[in-house]
Image 1 (tube, rainbow, N blue to C red):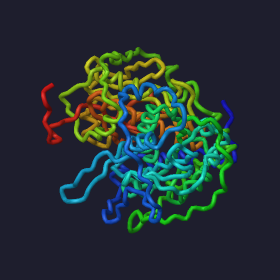
Image 2: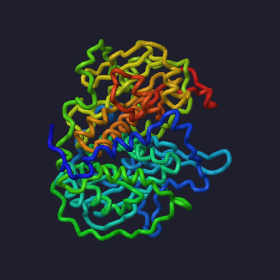
Image 3: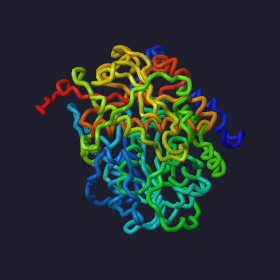
Image 4: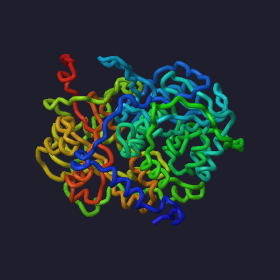
Length: 531
């Protein structure tokens, strides 16, 4: 076992993460007992709006032509020199920009973003921490999706603060630009209450799936960094730790020199528009965030040293469950759809009804699984097949694959049959009785052995596992739409999912559910055209 952070760190008291997870589980009893109702008059706005900061409009950019499935397969060759503002504008738009606007029949407008988000309550914000770029002065910026503009929070090159917070992360030290993400909890907790801290990483995960794919097509060598001291990052971005929390840092590009010494930090006192008439505090979320915080760069470095490198955490049980395997059969290169990543992201939605009469081909499912699990460039993981999560499937309608329950083995790129049968009714039950899970062609669950993850990484391992599950779900979304079918994310009865896949999944916890299948166009008021 690798070196752990000091035992005195709050991060090492793993009871906190397990207690939070247990407290926020869905069960039939908890759902029936809930008295929570949505106060529509108090619904928070989906934007972080600064009252006095002038916008810096982002430029128009040329759409990329890299096929989405290629973007998921491998990044483009590294870019020479730092990115310009047009490249950053494209990455920000494809990660978190507004892609659609829908008017409600009774009035009002819904602005949909590039990434799937629980309840369309977009609570994740992006920030840029930059050195001097060809067409952008060094500074700390907030990205405003509502007007596609940056607002400068601090002038000067502050990248060294991030390097110090990570105790010298090599990826942060070489980057001319760092994208930081953070959640304002109330914007999601208004609907989902304490469970919204899970959604920080679910929604942050689907956003980062887009971000990593888009930045990869620009040759920016994106890397996910979770090993950083929280407080310096919060101070740099001007976050209120009572209401907001940092998620991840993603360095982009490669600079010739390390960042210079950063100017001293002064508190940011920037006026914000209120989110809603009466913001409600989320003590359970605040406590979970604090319990999983790293206090110093030294602790962050020790945390990174524990990274998962051999796949045993994500796929525990493989060594004792040696059942038969069904090897994936991905589409041949000549058969792959060539729609660009930009077009897929702009077209993507969340499927609202699946067509039970239409199956997926096993080759299509194989391609989606293979592209979604090629590995994650992150400071808590080594090379593939290292992972903190394992995938389990309930297959309903896949040509060439018997209906039933399966476990996926990344290293072998193969499915292990657990039991055959028609489990549509059971799948609907597991997803809180939602017909989407019963009608889909297949449901893909991310599960993790949380006790083992937490022994290795402390409470912060909970953040890492949830984020990896969200990124995997986001990649499945992208692959599904690129392949010509649909996807949606669903919630679930936690313990019932683990029980359904046991004994193989005994001791594991459900983290994310992605349902895949063809949309029921009739139910959506549309008509399918021949061919």
